[in-house]
Image (tube, rainbow, N blue to C red; front, side, top):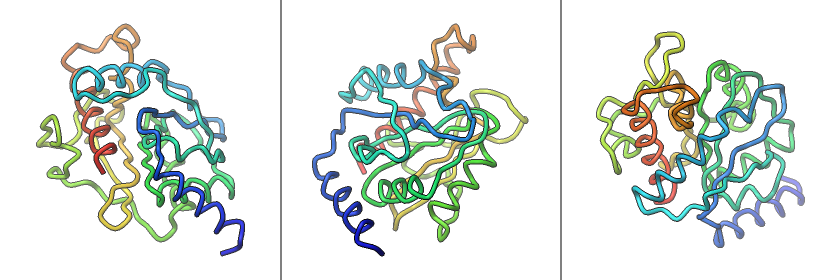
Length: 216
């Protein structure tokens, strides 16, 4: 490892000791995919978590890029979209440092993101494989109970909603959800006209994710 990498790694580790746990962010990425989709999703999730599970997250989420060293200020970073996503070598290094230094990324496939994010994750962690989360994982029952795993929010290919993760030892550092579209369920009701019980399932699952992130 060169001296530059050592310095960056040390800075990230040190800065996590003073992490601002009251901010979350969405990742702006390159490649052509619509990283900006579901613009009301995180705002509504924040409001729900603050009112229901007593978090104190800033009501305005941030937009951050993969090469930004300030990633470490956000314990939860959200990635979504429908299309291609590409990380360059520096972004790969920065995202790896972020995750191994205590950060957490939630990738929620808004339909069509899956093959591209899986390709990019192998660049970040060539030594790790995505592992499907068992239905008894704490993320399914730490606040609200989901004994059957992820709820189905939107139909895409009529497949089972699935959650996979990357782990550092026993800590879940990246969650990848697909065939569920939680973010659509977090959006303002008039965007997708989802029934209220569907939106509630999505928000409850989101609250479980946030609870897990802030407690681990």
